[in-house]
Length: 153
Image (cartoon, rainbow, N blue to C red):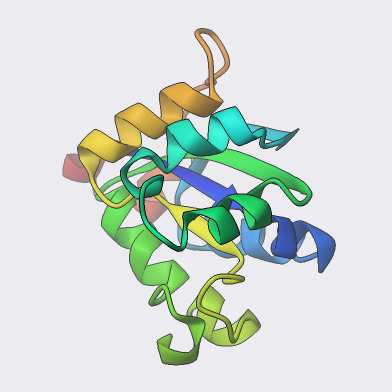
């Protein structure tokens, strides 16, 4: 099992797409083990996007991510990072394939609805930024046996 951070960005919240996006994640068979709505502060933005702070595009990125509430999710499942990145589609939504979240609901490079951790180290770091101790609720379901083979659970 692997965990990843997923953010529904301000554009997803403002466009009232959170339910549809959450459904896409659950339809894939991934588990939501943490979920909250919050307002990203400039300080949290700088921590989250630390590798981009000195880049010319960062001010616009920060302005966008702090522009409205976001929904943060902790998602768990086999190869959750790769599965979610495939489900989200390419970062530039104009290049995202139909059937992906970005390919179906977005057309912008920046206002692309959703963020997902890009690797295991990033997932650990990002999850810790958005979820504190005791805020994740791992669980199992009787449906696990029809969603995953026994050696995948």
